Amino acid sequence: MTDTMPLQPLLDAAVTVLEAPTQVWSDTTGGMGTSPIHGVYHGDVRHIRAVTAEVRGTELESIGYGSPDPRRVRFTDLLRGLDDASADPKVRLDRERTVAAGSFTEVLRATTSLAEDVSVELVVRLTPDFSPMQSVKAGIVEEPDWEWDGSTCRRGDASFTVRAPGAVVEASDAELALRWILTVPARGQAEAGWSVVLDDPTLVVIAAPSTTPAVDTPSPSPSPEDPRAARWLARADADLDALRLALPDHPDDAFYAAGAPWFFTLFGRDSIWAARLALGSDPSIAASTLRVLARLQGTKTDAATAEAPGKIPHELRSGALSLPNEGVHLPPLYYGTVDATPLWVCLLADARDAGMPDAEVRELLPALRAALDWMTVHGDASGSGFIDYADESGHGLANQGWKDSGDSIQWRDGSLADGPIALSEVQAYAYEAAVRGAALLDALGEAGGDGLRAWAADLRLRFRERYWVTTPEGRYPAIALDARGAAVDTLTSNIGHLIGTGLLDRDEEESCAELLTSPALSSGYGIRTMSTGATGYWPLSYHGGSVWTHDSAIAVHGMLRAGLDAQAATIARQLVDAAEGFDYRVPELHAGDAGVQGGRPVPYPAACRPQAWSAAAATVCARALNAIS
Image 1 (cartoon, rainbow, N blue to C red):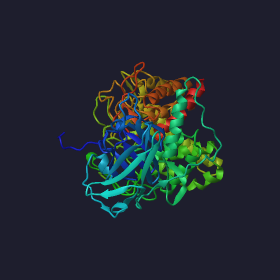
Image 2 (cartoon, rainbow, N blue to C red):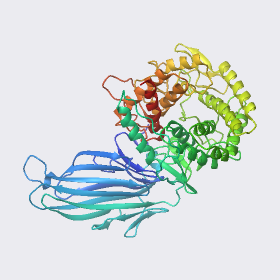
Image 3 (cartoon, rainbow, N blue to C red):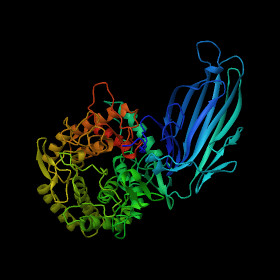
Image 4 (tube, rainbow, N blue to C red):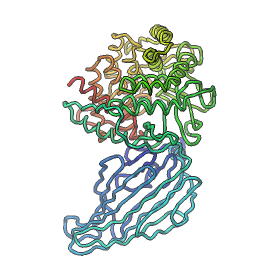
């Protein structure tokens, strides 16, 4: 690596407030500009790179911050240069920030307990930016290029309008400066405020209204054995509400944005799993997510976009996504996911079980049939006999399961598996989808159920013949079959996704659960993505030893369905321990280092947060703790 190679920004030390599709990242003092991630974002554009506050005649000395909900944060500073000589500080500045979809507001309030008035000259400086999100993620710093007309700053289609009552606004080539002179009365306070209204007409997503779930299903009550679960669930529910998005042509059909900062958009797999895991808290999101994805379901075969008839998309963006550091160039609507289609069928079955009316289910019957056809006819692209994937475009995702990094499918010796790849968990999703899809067709009085059940039974038999491996760590299903049909023998967290799907026998589920709770996979803060016995294991590897909260929660979800309540509770307790260490806003992933008594998880410093499926894990963990209380 050279000194000039750009690096992806680190996120773990930053403070974020958000209401999708808008988010603001700063340091713990409220300042923006000292870290590459800082700024005010709307959609896939960072509109403002830096925001700083100054008070003439004094340093701002930060003494803390608090964020009562995802959309608000307050930073507190002392202004000791304007104070008297006594020990107790008597002059302070509080900055309260509020984010709403398309706007950012800050109120700066100076307060004093001195017996005389205090004059405060306050300056807020803004650095416009308009860098695309993909440049920020790649660590590329773009030269500022913007126009200012006295109230609105613009670059291309994106713009923001500044409102600063009572301020003198000055513009230079590099920044905007907002200046106020406040007179703070004795033992009183004075305030100034400013805001920006952000606009980008190219956005393909909009904020979805916060609504009461249509189905009257109360959120699961956290277990009385651990009150921390209640704090996690409350924080998670608030974050999920702030992550709600919709598409402009159907604004009432909400889905969860995958997460902040990079994924404020629709992701097939992520949005489906978040809806499944959160079903006990918000059953309405399942039905609307199903409808959103059905409208984008594939209708043709296109190698450039990975589209195929009946296939559920991977992600939607307003423009092509280019990640130069990773050699990835994706079209605005990309279908490179092999698991979203069977998962869509499973979510439809879950939604009906949770009370989705049959009339609404029937409206999705064409999409159901198309998804089942893709799974049973088109999903085996290589003729391996299993659902598999390979990037045919040369610039798409090399791996198209949830572990989608380039090095995620490894042999125990650390070498990479060659594709096409047939992931073990995808076969489990497909088995469950076929069985439950058949039951849906039966319930709706439709034909085709018997054929699906026969297909599922055959898949189950062939899976048992081909996937099981025995290594020094035990006997378990391989993570995948490679291009030669050989079982890739690394012990990974993927086995947790098989539990509760029906693909495994009871004793097989129990043996998988035993491995998942063993020291090789169980970190104390959740399940490692890769066993410590594998050559490629590294606790800070993205998919090769780290812990992903949703990944562990999927295992909990399956264990509960399989009646393995004690094992589910064991993993749920570990995730609650991790949640406490992250102040109950659990990130996308954390390091797989072993937990210690009284310690806290080591962050993965580039992990996104909040992340929808990490937040949704709180719901299923509450269920697991309730099951044994």
